[in-house]
Amino acid sequence: MANHTSLKPIAIIGMACEFADNIHTPIEFWHALEESRDLGSEIPIERTDLMSYCAHMLNQDNGELRQMLIRRGYFLSASMLDTFDASYFNLSDGEAASIDPAHRLLMLKFVHLIEDAGYTLEKMRGSRTSVHIGQFSNDHAMASLRLKPEHRTRFHCPHMLLYNASARLSYHFDLRGPNVSLDTACSSSLQAIHIGVQTLRTGEADMAVCGGVNTVFTPEQLLNFSTIGAVSVDGRSRAFSIDANGYGKGR
Image 1 (cartoon, helix red, strand yellow):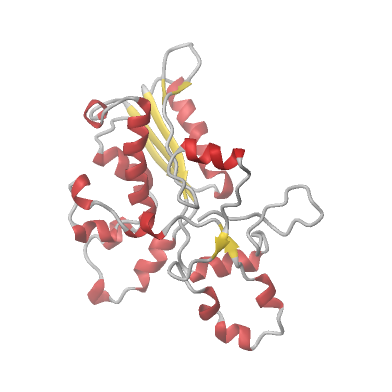
Image 2 (cartoon, one colour):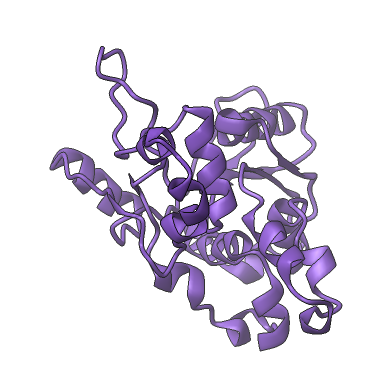
């Protein structure tokens, strides 16, 4: 989060995050970096079962696919994706269940962000605050489209699209600056910050909320990441090393 003062540097006044291994705050993340902790794990079976999804392919394979399949990564805890206090945000349980888990996480982290910045939600309402969110995952749309027609509600169609990443924050918290959701693959969150800075420089907003979110929980996505060869099967990034086999993906 940053605020705008004409012709002066832009100040970062608040931060919030959620990472693997139950890291809920920037301070916890900093401690993990200081300690050089490995936050990776095997793919949690409650998240998805990639091996079962690919079983019929593995039975016909000569071993090449098995070697390509992702086995490890950096996974948010199930509680962060599966639990949500709908009443706190004045949402019904039915509507909350149809919202992309990534967007529910953004709503929660926005509250933490405002607290870290020393503001209140009431003070933010009606403010000229822009929202810029990068999102590279569309697993919620994939999962929603799998539902049988009788299990879909009127909420599913509008809630499965990525525009909600930024628009939901602007609408729900009454932020009256520009908002944009964007997907530029791995550079999405950095591009969001870039656009947010431009918005402040041009005076379109007094404050900007910028960030990124990524949640992978469908076997289709894990298979896609495996077959393109860009993601490390053992979940480790080895930049500039001869042993590099892709990047460790966070989900």
